Image 1: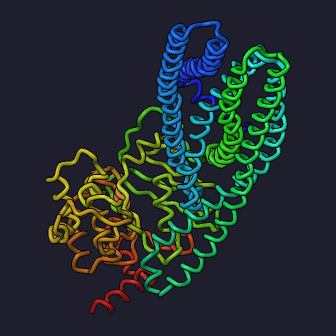
Image 2: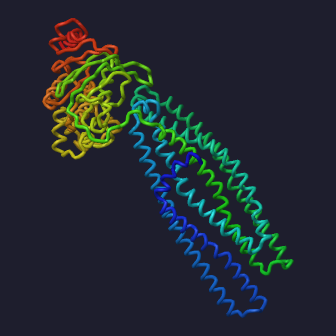
Image 3: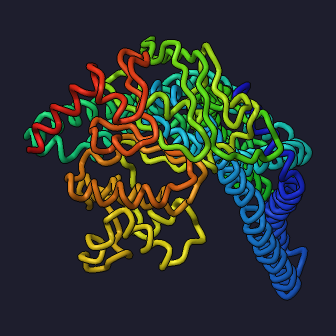
Amino acid sequence: MKELRYLNKYFKKYWFKLLVGIIITIIARVFSLVMPSYVNKSIQAVEAFIAGTVSRTETKEVLLQYILIIVGAALLSGLFTFLMRQTIINVSRYIEYDLKNEVFDHYLSLNLNFYKRNRIGDLMNRISEDVGQVRMYAGPAIMYGIQTLTLFACLIPLMFIKAPTIALYTLTPLPILSILIYQISRIIHKRSTKVQEFLSSLSTFTQESFSGISVIKAYNLEPKVNAELKELAIEGKNTSMDLAKVNAWFFPLMILLIGISNIFVIYIGGKQYIDGEIESIGIIAEFILYVNMLTWPVAVVGWLTSIVQRAEASQKRINEFLNEQPTIKNEVAEPTPIRGKIEFKDVTFTYEDTNITALKNVSFTVKEGQTVAILGKTGSGKSTILDLIARLYDVQSGEILIDGRPIKSLNLNSLRNAIGAVPQDAFLFSDSIANNIRFGKEDATQEEIEEVAKKAAVHKNIMGFAKKYDTVLGERGITLSGGQKQRVSIARALLKDPAIYLFDDCLSAVDTETEEEILNNLKKASQNKTTLIVSHRVSSAKSADKIIILEDGKIIQEGTHDELNMVDGYYKELYLEQLTEKE
């Protein structure tokens, strides 16, 4: 139960609803205890009539009165049981809602290294399947647990008051059942953890398979994927069956022990009736009803144990993530105005997951409103510079200044709101094209969306679709070509109209003619905006105010297009090579 203590804050939040639910539960159980007692009284009334001590008319009147009491109590018990579910089960849904939001918000706060270490399918499973298991503990487990405790607290003393000997024999199997439940629950806990871990593996496999379906089909890997899924399914079946075999012991054991209790009631009660130790055979009927009333609560004990064990295993997996603290924190509460000047001072950065040093003592300055192009071979550290400016990572050595202030002293939300980033791998959501562009500015009008789409040279393509801007894209924008996805991402950044633009090789999938059109539009749109363009093409860089050449994480050249083209080096070689290719 240690892991489930995390939920106590939610129980405190909804304590009043839970208290009302508990009171209603107790009332419902009390009304349910009326029926057995009046069944006994009804039998006694019939016995009195048979003995000739009361008349037929008096017996009918008494029986009618008892029947009305039994029906009324049953109706009231049913009503309060309904209200009980409406309070306690609803609370579990509130807790599920809050916990999912907390987990999701925490996911968003964690840095990129976290997502490199963990698989998406596993993260999805923990926020869905695991939280669902926890909800079962916060709702049904509590509700039926209170029901069972209330019934035991009311019924067992009542049984001993009415017939101590019968009650003693009737309740004898219960301690045996408790011991068996304790032993089995330990096994359930271990096997429930394995089941949850398997579900994470299954979610990861299916998520990766669906995301990479085009690659699977292109390489004719369907048989291989099917074979892997079959192996995974067999593993899942075996894991689930191991758990099901243990769970399968609960109900047969309970029914057996309840059956033994009924035998005790009939045998001991019958013997006492024959010996004159009890006055009426109605007490036997009453106790049989009591035993049957105990059947479900006793059965629930095993089910509740299984739920609690599953919930604890799931909450433990959730806590593992919730206890992980983000390394990049917003330490400044007040909003920070961002103008756009950027300075790197002897910046060195090493990726934790690969231990690769991407930047080595890099220093440069980008003035406010200046356009700087960054070129270099693959792996030279170009994209890393953009990630550091957006503070997706923090540097280990050196310092990054924005507007003359250390980047860590800025409000993180203000910094990122001031940036319009277009990543190398353009990501689009499974939504309409208009909403994907509007992602940069939620209150944008249709006219504003179309204007930036024209600047990104994608408006004509969109108008060619049947539903135009209302066209719903497939996952990750699979409906569009690579170049179209890049241009929609550019339109998204332009719509945001930020102080800083970060373009990460975002024209790599666009032809040179379209590239020239977009670059001219970007030059107009980014006037007085600080702009950094990462590219492999000289055509994207030649009009920049400054060009930086990176190699192996170090700056090897820096200057304008004309300056760099006058000296031998990487830039001039690249320019001549691409000029030859163009011709």
